[in-house]
Length: 185
Image (cartoon, rainbow, N blue to C red; front, side, top):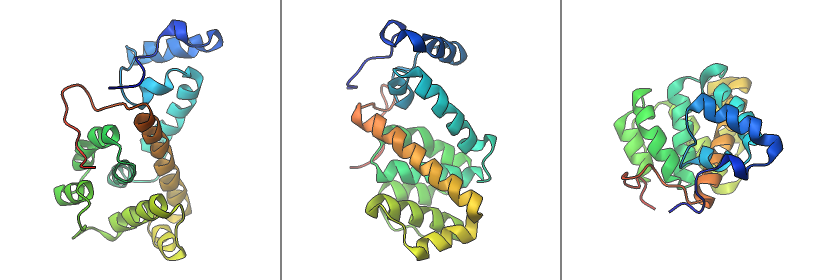
């Protein structure tokens, strides 16, 4: 059960109510779960984060959709974030990631028959999240596939989704009602 209820206009600082109102008007409702439900308690922060998210998820990023979704799934798995995994596993399949890749990543099984680009993303994310560093070999492999711009975007995408996972996990936000927790922990 989430540690907080949905954000309420009367509970946000008066100087941020305009940002709250704008977000709710654009979205059509107050989110009840997930990272945006947490972040809407600081509406100006949410608004600024949404600009970065929009860029990283396609408005400007050089990364293809399958790589973007894989980066989000690696981040979700390495942070045991049920909500992000639930939200992106199907997107990853639609973007072209194989069922074997997604299922084995979820179950922490060996990843077989994955492309060199996919391997670069998985190795880069796993190594960083597990050691808080990336070796020269892993960095150089990712750099060779994505270039400087792409690697900066990949790194920022994983960092942004790690922030979302931190919010989700700390506030105990769960996948939508009635949905099973998709990750074995």
